[in-house]
Image (cartoon, one colour):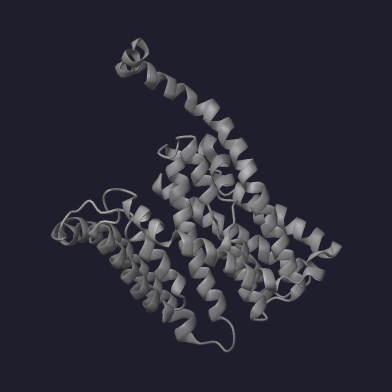
Length: 334
């Protein structure tokens, strides 16, 4: 699954980048910085809704489910690299900011990935938490220590990668560092429990104070922005992602539609490009329409494609497993 899923991520990043850039040029805008900005905004994938639907269908551990997770993970890394390269191109060319720092940042992320598998699980499960006494409190001392470690690592990684291009690299790999800590998903539970209320409100404030305020409503509602945005949304934004897994067999369209979803990061790139005068208000409106197409249609189309695939390819094996499980017969007899 791994190599093919990585190939899906590469295609899922390059195809929207190239198609979005070329279509922007076809609309009469220059490739740099307008075309590259649009392509970069269309490249990121958000599979949050897809993962929830996979979990509901109980197919997250299937090969295609793991392929979606892996492809989305690698896609995020590639998109973060593109994000850094794009905004390092503003102003005069700087070898350190444009070339050297991204290379160091990529190497840093590689080391952090190895540490996430080899170091942090052992350090937390075998060295740190066993030294903390157990208790029956609502928020245990061990959970408090784990949360402090997560927050400290977030600040350290984000600060380090801030000087290498963008703090978002550090935020991403800090969260990834606890994926192998046992019990599985417990660090995520601890983090959400402590930050859920703040996160839910800050996301609303973030959208209201950045993307929402930045949208030029008069341009967005113009017919020109609508038809160009529709073309950008159906082609470079949706179709390129749907077709990014042609070598994944029967699951190619399930994986493709899972990669279509977009979320905060894509809108943030578009907004920052507009704020940095890398795209004008007309192009910004086109990108917003394109992202809205993916945001609205991806969940519905993915659910339909997933249900059809599960019914055709997963129902038989599940029934066979159920029939072979003697526990089911005992449960039926009871």
